[in-house]
Image (cartoon, rainbow, N blue to C red; front, side, top):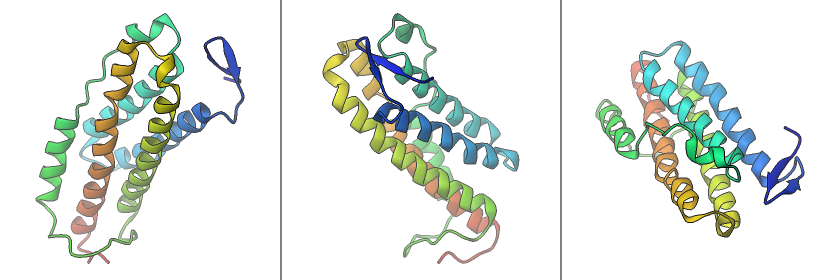
Length: 171
């Protein structure tokens, strides 16, 4: 895609929308690396699908296709439950964490950092364009924010689990 159209006005490749879509795409790579050696393939695949669906929603926001896109099946409540489950496998957190105990832990931390950036870019995008959207579309776009927020916490705890599994002391 060379241009993105908002209200029939073309946007350059350096427009914020492309920064957001690029970060979402970039985040799917380390999630894919996590899936290779994971017993949690289904949840990680669901997260990848969620991110790709957000991309689709963003890219089609001005078109009728937007409302016919598939519903996103991932919820912040489901993520919260996963966070609690993984957190119960870790010791109490008493300090900062420096990534580096194993490859999977580093990949999970990279996902966490990218999700945080996606959340910031997404928030900037919908806040800057919010008045252009119809109420139904605004509601849909805003509904993704709690999930993005919880995903960064999920990847933080997920990274900690890899540290515990590798019998490494968190730094």
